[in-house]
Amino acid sequence: MSRKTPAAMTERNPSRKSNNDFCSSVNDISIWLLQNLNKDFNALR
Image 1 (spheres, rainbow, N blue to C red):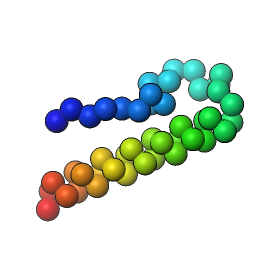
Image 2: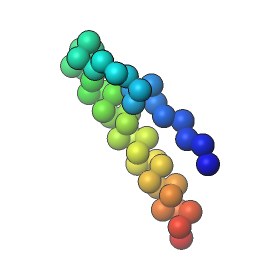
Image 3: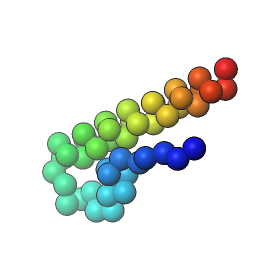
Image 4: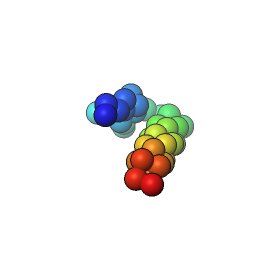
């Protein structure tokens, strides 16, 4: 099972970004994690 990681996850220099960009990156990662955890949970049932 291949999974696409958001670009924010591979970003190696977050300090270059503005605070707002950083917050939205964290938000994107949270959403991505929740979606994948939900998929895993549904697969286990």
